[in-house]
Amino acid sequence: MRIDKLLANMGFGTRKEVRTLLKGGSVRVNETPLKNGKTHVDPENDIITVGGEEVEYKEFIYLMMNKPGELISATEDANDWTVIDILQPEDQIFDPFPVGRLDKDTEGLLLLTNDGQLSHRLTSPKKDVGKTYFAQVSGEVTEEDVAAFREGVTLDDGYVTKPADLRILEAAPVSEIEMTITEGKYHQVKRMFEARGKTVEFLKRVSMGELPLDPELEPGEYRELTEEELEYLKKITNME
Image (tube, rainbow, N blue to C red; front, side, top):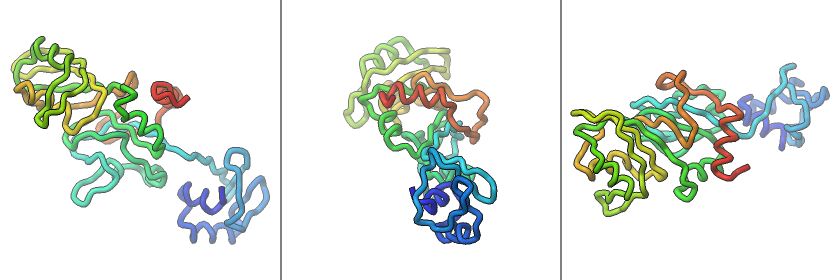
């Protein structure tokens, strides 16, 4: 990889600003000053420093966010703030994007990455990666609803969903449930309950596969995935 591209990708400025750094002698590769931006380096093996500080290069970024209800799951939007807008600049430079989407009023676990292959595999219905949600639903959710979800529900456009695992936590005027789906149709959880004559009042994604939302993350907070969490995601999508 060219040194100017590497440094620009790591947030040291535009290509023009990086060239200024190089000409000023601030950049060293294996202790040797480097001024030609076209020079290729090996970020895995070369020791690259800028102003004496070693550059820790990484190609991909993997983030877990507790998405608050008011943000759009998109990279940009003309009217609303997106999940990208609240990232720190040092994370934005990797150009991450949401893995799948959560509706604007839906909270909870959202992964962000610039690894297109992993994102595609996690969201592909063929991989059957379960997404589990907690919901508060107006009306009493019954065992008949559980059986219907297990068989698949016909949505308002005629689409029949794949089987979903519905678990009743509390049946009351406002029922509390958990459900796991393996696909991500538009407003799917809400539309499945609408097909049963009920309305979702609150919705939060709590896990993807067996990867739970970090309980320490407040709404709007995020962190990088641990190596173990990333290995798990790659394992369930057959990327190992």
